Length: 474
Image (cartoon, rainbow, N blue to C red; front, side, top):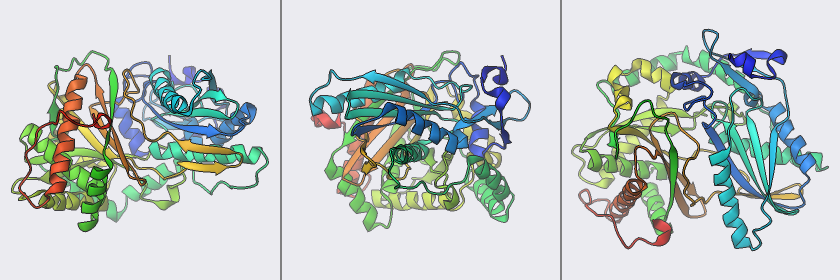
């Protein structure tokens, strides 16, 4: 069955678009529409919010449809069976809204926990099939008429974490306007297809020529570092992804920020430096090549655009001869600033890199791990819009099995809340790792960070995993 046959709206297709570099790169992980991989139904992005106030379901449905009509990226099918892949925009159609009864949770404590459980349940159970337009789903759990939890899901081929917050912001605004509130107003925005065209023009410019030369030199002879797995990967086996969630204590978060400020660095630079140290200790490598995700939104004109912008960027840091953690932060900072200055889409970087860079992805005894700190606008963390109050389900600490998938490898993801919290998640294939191994790695990283921050000018710290960690840290 072709993609055009799968899509019920194929006869009403309205437009055709170039793919962005990120979308084109996803095609390299194409395993079909009904399997795992980039275009499978489990490669999704999700986020959740508590909604307080008298909620009108019909208006919510109309507001969801407004959002899908506003953002053509949510209605774009990536056609991969007609030669060179391209994007085909479909006309607006209703967003699927599923409603569940959560009234058994009575107390506020019960409801907050149930809201997070509901978010996990949607991530584990929901499917966003690539041919079913629009590629936006909504699940509403109702505690009562004035209290609910809303989970939004998109397919990852058309969205990223930043986009999810734009979608919710636009949904809240459309809902308020339909309820008769004149404010707020939606900001002007450009469509994702415009970004893809702009990107093509940019990659033909002089700045891209200079960036290509930088990456050609930077990645000469480079290979991604792998973390050994508990079991050998079976290529024919479908992965089963789990997530382990954790938090670091506020004192550790404060110390991270303090060292970052003193070194004119970001907290991410300090955390990534510690990750370089972690990889060095785990593997013995001194030439550390590891990927991170960047927001990919360097052009302000597209800050309001929903689409796949995130960019995988290889970071190469030489840890040999580092006298102290402060020295390592300096080196890591330089690596990150260079990568930002010469950022290119990962597909373009690969064209410049040594062919051996990607060989570790084929290693059946290890995985390439990606380390990131969330990139998205701080919207609707706690805000009254119209007659509904929206609160983000941000402090997520409930682990889960059989959750949404990623195309390859594993992922460490930190969320830094300005209020003083640091939570993280490791997404991993449970056929490759035991949860106990993931827990031990997080504990090792935590202790490396704690020791490094306590004595940043001392020699690299030695530490062991603590057995007396607080329950919230385990």
